[in-house]
Length: 326
Image (cartoon, rainbow, N blue to C red; front, side):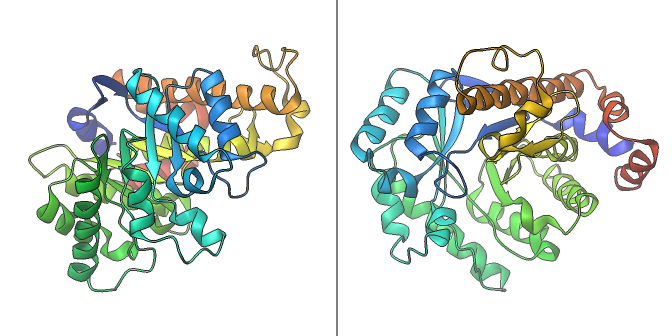
């Protein structure tokens, strides 16, 4: 598969943040108030207790938290004391589900000014205009407005558009802003997994023609197989809620309902611990994702992408990948 070889020679394996080098590809466990069982502050506390070195938090959830001041103070302390790398989302996902029409750019910037993150996605328009130039100009203006507010965060663009126009929109935005990373919701990449792999592959090919390496972050990607395949397709960074919404079978990488961990007990320290069900399950999941991403990273660094594909997928599916990555 020629693409895997070509891309391997060009991709970066580390992303510098706050004097640290984040090994790529990387998965950021997301914290959200939507479709989860605990409060965002509780998830934050648990991730800190688990020693998680990087995570994503929503600006909306920080602002609306019952522990707002403590949340802000703790996030600031992490940055000041060189703790976990904090990636902050615009909060539009949560505000949409909460039907809060008052969450606007100024709302996002009001949290951004507290300097509670190292990286932050721009305030994004989830219903963008069809015109590429108009869409991209809106994104560039949002980035500029927020970057003027923030002292600690690098603002990362999010692009929403039809899949057919994605490459053109990303390249147009790059010409206007010369960004280092671009973020794209996984859901706009296509209907099925192969279509999404093809979309990311085509985007990576286009970005590899630029002078400087451009990182791709996919929003809402936490399924283990999607993480593996989209990493090989050229994505560098991901965030998702699967770590706290589901439970993963560490032997098969298949996700189960959060309440079904007893079906998949393994030998990890969390499954054998005396912690309550929720804490032990979250620990089990985080432990899996750390190991899973390391497996992907090792396969890419040692140029053994084909080998890892053969471990997890049958020959028919690998053949279908070969038609994309020829």
